[in-house]
Length: 295
Image (cartoon, rainbow, N blue to C red; front, top):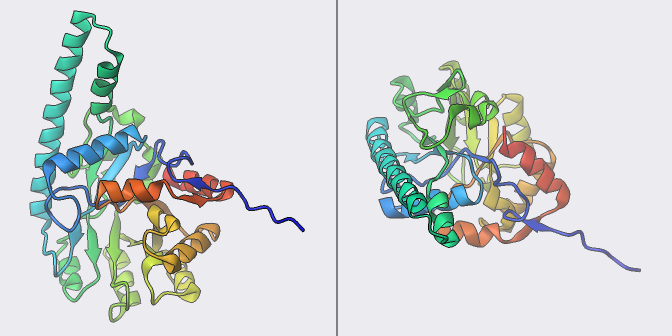
């Protein structure tokens, strides 16, 4: 008897990143355990643009151990936006000079083109459901996904891309959602009451990387979905970046159509690229992932 193993594809091979909205990453530099320097952030954004990602939500941590405030994060986002605008202006000038000289250096021309990031960037945050969360919720001291009439509000930077090129469907889905997380090992006291409180304040709870929570089983995921809590998949979970147990859960939840959106949860560009080359997706999974990537 012969057994045929189904062909598997890597995230890079699957086409998933083409036109993708990344709902969760830690590229905003120097504010949490993600990317630390402005140069690293710019390189990461350039690489994600080269891979085809069209829209990125920067979602730094807000938690007791990393006590960011929305005001501080908006200031850092403004600094990143300024750097991107300056970079785009420089590249535009270089492209003009290059054209005037009428040189034939195609490699240089490609570099100049890819440096123009063509990304829609927005700011939200990943909120830990810790002992201080209810106080933050009561005081509206939060950074939800904020979009109005297909255009991002004040927490946005859209360098070198027209608004009609962006994914309005993804923005509509994310509008007024609040990205939250818990400990990987145990739930916070009154988890479901916390989630209900988020909805009572007018936000849609979006639970980050549920496949990583060791205490959650199928019954927990069903209850969350019954409460209309949305689930965000870390795409690297499918490639085993967080261990075999998280990978098994991620594949199972994907086939159950449990997820509403995708995130890279990128903290380090090299780590992301390493796991993005792992052959972890069946053809069917690649199709499922591509439908989620544009929501």
